[in-house]
Image (cartoon, rainbow over all chains, first blue to last red; front, side, top):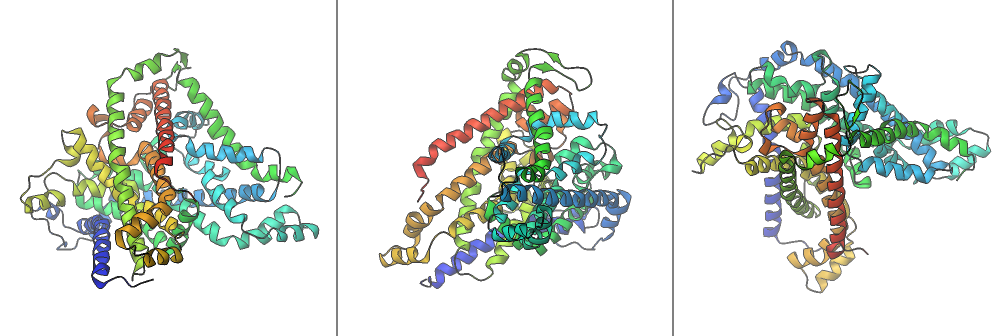
Length: 276
Length: 292
């Protein structure tokens, strides 16, 4: 490729940096406000750097507003959803990729259908189901469904399985291994990249889930972080320093996971064109 | 492909259960509910087409529809354009490529509630940095999400949605740009194409299928948007009618007013509108999307 002129290269960088700054300002402002002394956020012109730095804002939100509890709830729900989703999607995708059976194409069609159907339509009957089981104000409505797989994850893993050599299956099968054994002895170890991509997707969508906790959890002790943050302003009389500290606590775990796993994540999107 | 059909059935069984319990049953039950009056506690009462007539003649519904259309018309083209520019600039030999990509992607993974809270603070009438910036530029402050004009409120929220979603569209378009071969670019350069011509005649036609898909996905996501409005509109029970969007209206009717029948009818109405919009985009597709 020809080297573009130096001037052009500068303009490219200028636009890219400007875009990055716009993306990052809200994060900077969140962290900065979260460390301000109460009252210092309400000055004009705004102080961009907190002085003094009040780490105690975090302590207040963590202990007094009980974000420690919300964090534990979020971790619990997210980890279980993650395990359920990855395991069930792997099993179902394996079934679809390696076996021919009646109704197989119908399942693919139904998978597409579930992605098209807006949650607003299924929301009320689903609520009714959990209410009938007496599962309101428990974590069951958030967790159990993920053990039955999801269209996005099944699709992602199915696409991946199709790239793996089929001869492995045939050879092992002829040697007398049963399909379960072939699944976890041969194909699971080979699928680590795709499984981790799905794990990251599931982690992020489970951690960020707001609608379902909002519908199913009334008791404050059961709140997950997004829900706790949504109602935090009522607890702290709209204190922006504390709300922003709560926001940092909510964002941080997902940010860390993303930084470590961004390669999987971005590749996963690029290969399927969807997110969870 | 193996012949042992029952194995395939065993492995896919979890998802079959998911389909029956959480999609087919809710789908049918919800359709039934649109013809009933139901408060979740007493048995549903058949009311015929009453719910449908009621929401179609309700001014709030049309206001909410106007808002979500306006929201989509702002959000979809702007986000796509923004994502296309960033992807085009990133798709060349530059230093720090993956760092830029990561930064643009940060808002995508940020929980909506947190992102929304930050923007509410940025939009704050008296102490927000945005109004302070306007004042520095000798412009009069704007009330943003607290404004009395619906188009400012919805527009401000659309901006936040672009911030949140542009990185995602960018990654998709960037993936589409991988299909552009160096030979093709070289050949075009030999013929004297450069800069804008290169972009318009080579890059754009080749990524057009991906851009099209990105636009379809963002349109659907705009109509499905719930979290962003939940956070940005403030107290759901007190949102002014002029600022409502359909999903908030449905949520409010269902889980705050316990009008399950009416809410279901509205959800179906919205679903048909999304379907019609997608089909319309499909029609327009042939005009500009280029397939090999």
